[in-house]
Length: 369
Image (cartoon, rainbow, N blue to C red):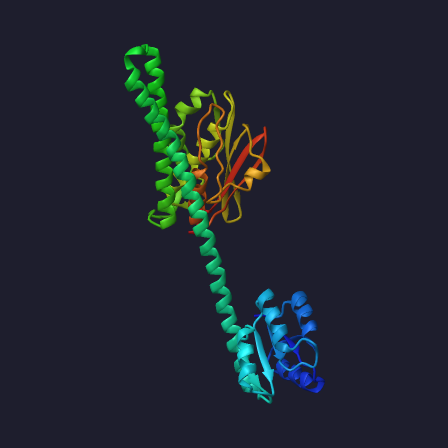
């Protein structure tokens, strides 16, 4: 473990030098000795020490408490005040400055060491709590945005279904059979899109809440892919898309078969959706040390660099329309991210507008079980 770095703020040279020697004996490092509050602020900004030992009564324009107040508010560095005085008003000012401790001169090594260790531990805990608090706040905001997006994406197809049904019901006798069939197809497609969105939302929420049963075992990705490709025979055929499967048999990974099928289904579905009629989708895999990297490539519309930054992020609205006006919400990619990370893997994309996209994800090799 790296030695903790301490800044000494003390305007009496001999006291500062003695304190430096003591700290080094106790196993700490001293980043510097400074004699004024202004110098302490500058040094704290540049070096970011782990802790500051601050003399309160500095013979400068800015005393130790004023300097500490500014340092703590800006950099959240823990501070121990040292002084020869125990005035109650001084102690109250020190508390408000963000002090983590207060010691009277002279002090012995054992007291100094105990105080520093307690303050460093308290600062570590507070830092972890602050990080967790910020993460929680960000997640709450992201989830609020996410569910706002989902409600919008659910409302649109449902509105189309309702208005089309009302229109068909009111004007049924005035339509020809062909017109009725067109309206029924609108209802059918709207219902299908709504169902797919709800299914993706359910799967994603199950993955987030941990209610997905995760049962990793030695699984052949070749067999998983064959199952998935059977599901896309019709949709690929309708767009005359060729799917090139370059996976070899006995490509074993450590994974949950149901989750792996969901990952492949979402990525292949997107590749078909954003490929032009008569296009091609290529599926590859390579062994890279203790992992296998699977890639699904298309040569369709591609994704801009700005939109690539929005992928895999909850609370960021990124939807695209397929080459045959197929709808999408981006929820499938969020699900893929959750499931890949469940396997201790990663997922990423390489893409250029008009050139196509390559989605890749890594999985642990079977021998890492």
